[in-house]
Amino acid sequence: MHRIVILGGGTGGTLAANRLRRTLSSSEAAITVVDQDDRHVYQPGLLFVPFGLAHLDEIVRPRGRQLHRDIDYLQVPIDHVDMEDRTVTLGDGQVLGYDVLVVATGAVLAPEETEGLTGPGWNQKAFTFYDPDGAVALAQALEWFEGGSLVVNVVELPIKCPVAPLEFCFLADWFLQQQGIRDKVDLTYVTPLDGAFTKPVASRRLGGMLQEKGIELVTEFNTGEVVYSDSPDAGGRLISYDDREVAFDLAVVIPVHNGAAYVGRSPGLGDELGFVPVDEHTLQSAASPHVFALGDAAAVPVSKAGSVTHFEGEVLAENVRRFLDDRPLDASYDGHANCFIETGFSKAMLIDFNYDVEPLPGRFPGPVGLPLMKESHLNHLGKLLFQWFYWHSLLPGRDIPGVHSAMPTAGKDRQQLVESEATA
Ligand SMILES: Cc1cc2nc3c(=O)[nH]c(=O)nc-3n(C[C@H](O)[C@H](O)[C@H](O)COP(=O)(O)OP(=O)(O)OC[C@H]3O[C@@H](n4cnc5c(N)ncnc54)[C@H](O)[C@@H]3O)c2cc1C
Image 1 (tube, rainbow, N blue to C red):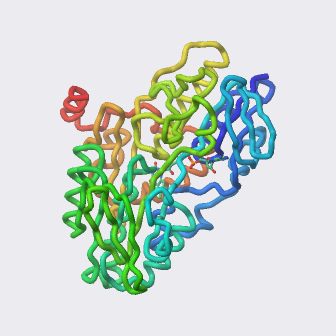
Image 2: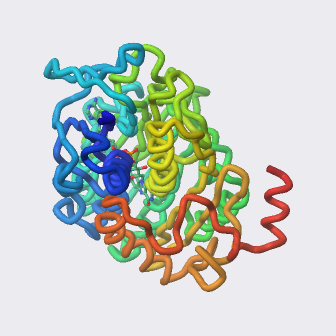
Image 3: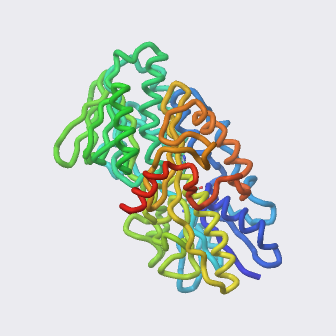
């Protein structure tokens, strides 16, 4: 009987456990999932909470209930991993031995790492929608907001879903128009990047959309400090390491992201940020062949996103089975990622890309699919419908028809595809 231990019961841990359980019987492998709490949050839904378009009770479900019944679920914090002994020690002193360890403990928000950010104005004048409590507090602040400067700031990369802060800007533009106060608000997007996004073609397109919507873009701004005003009527200032300043009345901050703290207590497992380096095509750790990682916890050169976690999960589950059977691993994960980008007014744009190919125009997943790199109502409906697929297809480890780990090329603009592959 093989012992598979999966650390983290979020998107990646849940779908990997369920995928493995579908193909390995309980007499072949014992599968144990460990997580510290029992709230599985559909994180893409957090974007809608500040605007009153979603509520926590619609996007949070118990973790254990998302797992197949022949999977053991332990609700205990992880203390550390010992790769030499092949054990995991939990916060309550239990020690779990493993033949395969899957690290899926995601990314942890660290607002306290930015000087001043968690001072007296935190959740009063500066908020984050990246966690459930922050998203709810921000909803209240936006309800009372009467005008002034609204600043959306990404402190540092990497972050989960790098398009989510841009989506927040587009939705804020829509929301403020609905409230009838758009002309009283200066909306600014402040990023450490040299453009709106990491990928050049999408960056130009998204930067153009910010401009069309009258949203100012401040680039190459590395926030070093946040200073709150003493006056209850004024917000504060973001100060960069090179002494530039952006004043705000209301700030929406995407804080520093790190790997889970136990990774730092586990010799050889992680990098300096606490993420776990793995082969970018097989997802196996270079430090130990018994260890695999996926999702936000994995240090691979692709966005930290649920779609990435899903596509990685397909290859990872296959590779865990191959490893246990002593067969060569499948090196087929190509960095496939896609994102619906909500752009306001019931429209969204869709981007699809991989390690080598930039987001390109065309259709997804094939020639008659959803429009790529174009705003459409259909994409907005796709974004909303995705939540259903998340709970009923992706987490249970079922395949979504036509959507697989390998990036499809069929619907993409042929000439641009060839050019993109040639420059990769
Ligand atoms: C606002 C927002 C919007 C997003 N929108 C999109 C989107 O539109 N499209 C998209 O593809 N992605 C989106 N994402 C990103 C997506 O949600 C994540 O990339 C995905 O959920 C990552 O899955 P994961 O399994 O790696 O991590 P998670 O789902 O975060 O799971 C990690 C788990 O590990 C557990 N854990 C951590 N440390 C410990 C410990 N010490 N002991 C025990 N348990 C521990 C945590 O409790 C957690 O359950 C968004 C994210 C946010 C925040």
